[in-house]
Image 1: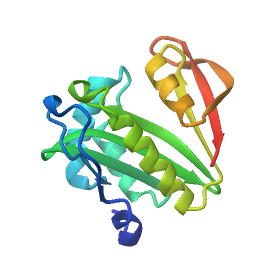
Image 2 (image 1 turned 180 degrees about the vertical axis):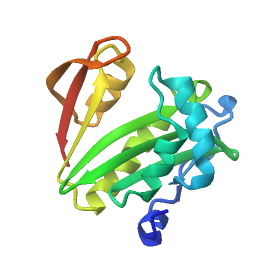
Image 3 (image 1 turned 90 degrees about the horizontal axis):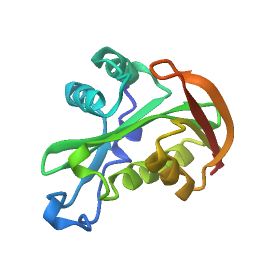
Image 4 (image 1 turned 60 degrees about the vertical axis):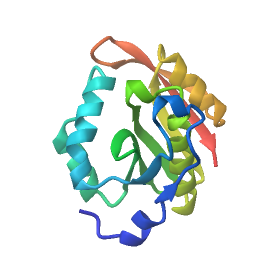
Length: 171
């Protein structure tokens, strides 16, 4: 497990109440991923993606000093996570997922904001990511933050041979 407790502690924050209180997402909190989160994250990954990462891959991210993963909880339930890799002065967003019951409540925006803020604190000057061409909600989310499509990577997703949209932004 990464022994850099200072960087882990600086991302813990309490967020404002959810704008949709009837959806039971009051006061979500964002904190660094821990080994105890890995099984829940792997289950969420299976719910959200056709090519999910394994528990072992998430656990390995905790050993990578260039990897930063955040979780979001509501009422002690893990409802989302996101992660990025710091590569020199670039943040590469590698994953983001929100439980289907908690979507459209700005949870993804909270995670992206937290990741980009943390990446800037770590010295990132730019951020990049790949997203499925057909994932319109994700594409719109990233565009809202200033990411722009710079290329298509044909056949990137092996399950569907779908293109990946390569996006970049300056921080």
